[in-house]
Image 1 (cartoon, rainbow, N blue to C red):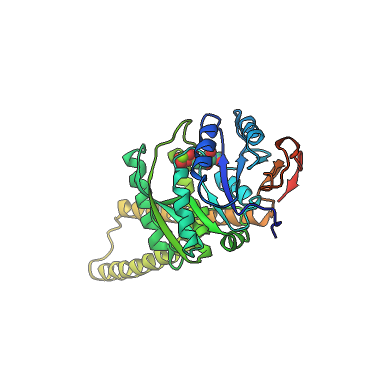
Image 2: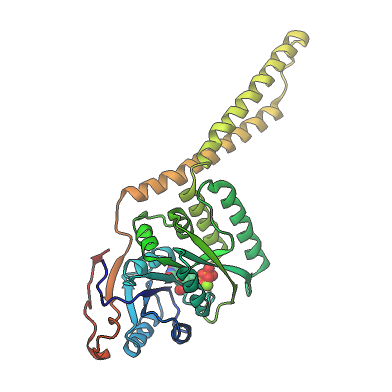
Length: 338
Ligand code: UDP
Ligand code: MG
């Protein structure tokens, strides 16, 4: 449970090497939340940055006690950094998830809050445009969403939606129960359900710094999405096997009849080789698919904590009259397991 002094809203911001953009992010966030009439905090998660991101965060917290800092023990990746932030969010009413790079404009947050005040538990921001991204990234993203939609079944991913969204406290508590290691957050957000609403916005190009994505990572991200979403690929082997067996049966009958009618002048080396190589390839692919799932089972069974926190400096409770100098209550919680 959250204490009565907890802020109403938490804004969770995972950041990896975002030193250039964080001060501007904080300024725009504070300006955007000026008129919302809710007490709020912002939870900055430093995901093992190699630059001065942590120092920048600590500087922001020194100036603005509404900022909390969670410093992870190393880089864990965005999905887990985000989870760490959600775990440490004290917002008693709602939480907003947003990227640090200003591609998700903080100015949209009041619209998300408006949707939540209408009674929706999940208010997600849907991109109208994706400025500053190549046509190839847009096309692959569109293909991925179409694929996920066709295999999703009961759990449907809203298209053109990233992690930028608002969750009510009860939706957040539901989400936090999902502790799997392989965290495809969009899938987890979709899985919890609850009344949801879209708010449309223009996605801006990155304000500064560089994206941490490349196509190999995106490919792996898609695999993560598919395998955490559905076991349908495991059935591919079954159906390929059935189809092959059916074709083999027919072809076998043809060969027998041909031999009976015309004798057998041993031939067919090329076709034999083609069929063998084809079947070998199909077997390796299906083995690979099984391997993808088995590897994930392996990682889950280890049961490790999702992340380790090097230190957690909570935000100051709103309107307690304490001064900014005397807050760091939980310094150096080394090895703390969440
Ligand atoms: N991020 C993170 N850990 C990582 C990679 C990224 O916390 O290992 C953060 C990053 O700082 C940013 C957000 O996740 O706030 C989105 O990352 P990025 O902008 O690189 O992704 P894109 O917007 O290109 O999908
Ligand atoms: Mg980005």
